[in-house]
Amino acid sequence: MTDSASSVRPSTSSTRSTSSTSSTTSTTSTTSAEDVMAGWFDARIVTGAHPASLLPPTDRDAIAAHLDRYALSGALVSAMASWLHHPIGGNAEASAVAHSLADRGVLACWTAIPATAGELESLTALVDRALDQGVAAFRIHPLSHGFSPGLLNELYAALETNRLPLCIDAAEISWADLSTIATRHPELPIVVSNVGYRKLRELWAALDGHANVFVDLVDFAAHQGVEWLAANNLADRLLFATGLGLRDPGEGVVRLAWSGLDDATVQLVGSGNASRLFGSGNASRPSGSENADRTSGSENADRTSGVRRADGGRS
Image 1 (cartoon, helix red, strand yellow):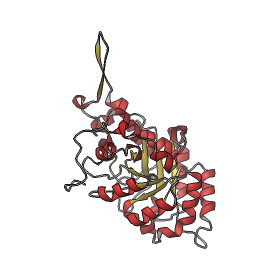
Image 2 (cartoon, one colour):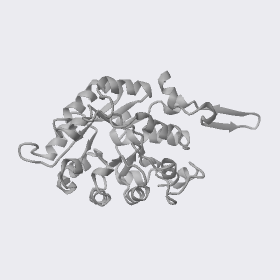
Image 3 (cartoon, one colour):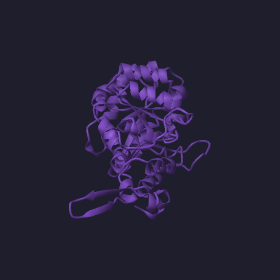
Image 4 (cartoon, one colour):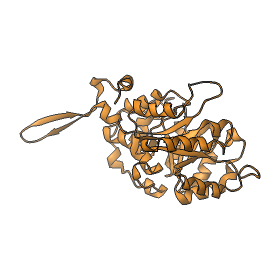
């Protein structure tokens, strides 16, 4: 862990600890904050420069420095160009960064649009090409790119067949359309990002109704929302992510590092869930039905205590 990460570590007084007692001795072992944070996988990074210069450009070196600063095991990278300039052409930028940092666990996330003459001939062929290049997930921007989510049924089917996750910002799709996709493609993992504030009720309906829906921590602004979801047996649907390139990464780091979750749950959210979804760490990707059975209520019931409910204006 580098010194620059110290600003986001929990204080010594808040460091998580565990105790073990025998018939003759009682010992307490403390897990350092560095150990808890080390090895997390960042499930949302955007390479490139925003035209409004909201943040410094995020190039290969900036991403490498980000991995070093927070001792990350890897990251999922998409391209700013795929969102704001050339949806398909920008995918090459994401892959270039991923290939140059492959030894650091960086994976590419490509962007898809409806098949259109002269732009993209086949979504199935696009997914096949992505698989050949080691792409770990796809992202779509229906609102920004001006199309109905229903025009990508071929994409959803191809992704579902290959268990490649579909990533999407909450602002890019209605919750009804999200539910439709999740229902029609129950083995397709769907990761919702940039949920924002006062969205827990809608998010809860999506997570509770669909075992294949996940959420990352980019702009996950609900007060104690992470703890609340974990207390309700949904820790295995949470993914650590910073949104580097779009947001200050410290936001996502602090949201998990300073949470009220126990160490095992922090590691699950920090890297375990991403390992299964994106194949990082050589783990197999889960289906929706497998994910639904993964965590039992007894394992999660005591993960948090005194967590506020989603009502009372806190969500």
